[in-house]
Length: 498
Ligand code: RVP
Image (cartoon, rainbow, N blue to C red; front, top):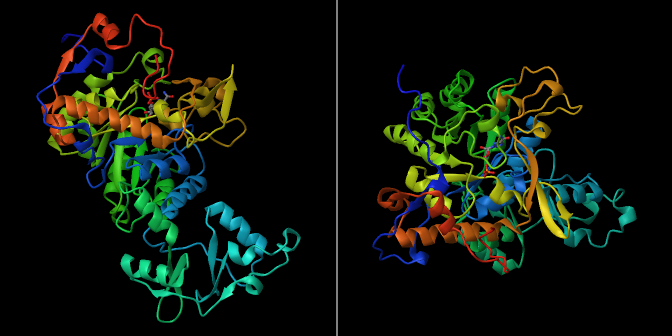
């Protein structure tokens, strides 16, 4: 029998980056990196596909700040596709498929649509798509609440002729029209007067506010979404594609398995998915990463057991400490020029640079983002402090059906065949994390920490950091020395929790 103990596994707390000669100051460091073969991000931060982390609000915020969100899959296909749709509509150079209403709809119906899609007005079209007006807050302001369900759109809308522009107008042209006519929404029409798109002033303002946002070729925010490999996974992939998803993540606890490799191959060989990159995972070894790369994955997600809510390593006794896992997986991924995502186990901003030096090109975060305003769920007060719920997708709570027909995330742990909730084997726990405010400020601190790492190591870019970075292994005494010690912390730091 070959040596059953193999090599030693190291994780973030086992290593430190060596300082090196530098001529870079933090503000000059370029944090852009590669998420998948065709998608780049200006911040190498991805939010986890977990039901206490990423729905459309988180995905919008992550993309605006230069990262990306992966929508979780513990919900119906329609609901998940609706989240994709919300992200894709949230901001765009031009909305190609705007939400519309008809002249015979009621003001109450328009109100409901505006609330649902968080917009302030809608173009009004006939059945054949001809633009006949526009209805905005301004038109509805003086309709009494009691008359909203009986007042028709046709009676209050601003009617054609409206200020419109031909489809294909460039951004400068649109800005000129907004300025000249003091309007906020510009419908785009074809030569027969049919609505083809919409440009809004708000979108231009957001583009200025979030210059590093992760966007597609049409100026819409990018978004990823998770699928499994079992049951209706193929149908889910199709629905997500139709809703405009940019990246599909085949999201399981053991990516080196027949079902996962099969669905990756199937998506990659179907031309209907040509525009979408596919991420496979998770794996934690060289052979696992090779299997995903050979199946055609456009990025490989690495992490078996490092997650803060994960119990796989104790329930199954399986996993690889994360720095070694990333290093090993990246050795194989490199041969295929496929980027690696270091998923789970990051506690501090310093762990990001460690993950990148170990071989990853981006990191995926759960617990660091779960306490923000943009994660699903309400704030909880415990002893005067604020918390938000955070749970593993392998926790009992996430796996249980609780009267629903199914739990969509059971196949993540290969337990889709388990007949009852009582027979589930959980691999995660449920808990709460401290409230952290808006995701923008968390991302700011994380990126700021990464920039400091780049300054200390003398790396101007992430590719340079990945080549230049060197580790020193540390001991328990070194770790103790690394954290604040021999003092009682009295002021909370924005980027450190003891
Ligand atoms: P962390 O950032 O340390 O909280 O880890 C988040 C990661 O943990 C997720 O991206 C996912 O890969 C993994 N996870 C999610 N649920 C569970 C579980 O229940 N075991 N693990």
